[in-house]
Image (cartoon, rainbow, N blue to C red; front, side, top):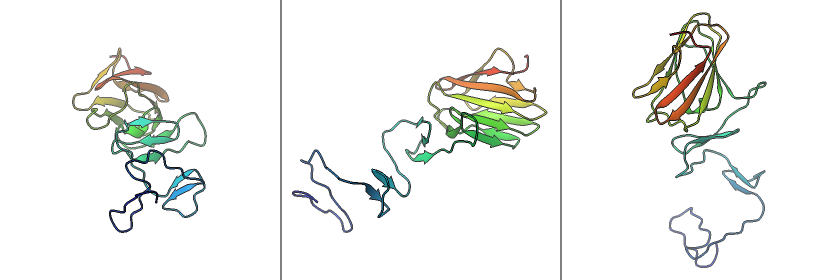
Length: 178
């Protein structure tokens, strides 16, 4: 479509050519839909190259560049990740969010940046609902600094993990004495 536009394969649409610097589309544009309801509506996954891992209030861009929708909880200020298992390793979707841990004995692992690239400055809040201990462990190459232990045994306690550099975190909150 446009002056000197060339189709290189069957079932391909080309807008303009290398000399075209602006393409004006009027109305809503749909990819995978014939009735877009927004300026751009895509049915399916979207991949964006060269975009750093990031989080926002409504979307998450994972390490593969895939944008994913995050749902708000029915109440509260952050997204909630309910965990009831005895072990859990933090995920990128936990960044700037709350984790509710309800198992009576749990271990939460902070993974290395090479596995999960949380942005520096990330804060994760953990609510401990269990009646036993919740221990925080360092993944390979990770350092968790604190003034107390890396364990919480106070039911209904709150712990914060803050990423300070590539593989260095600070833990604070209702932690047990060393």
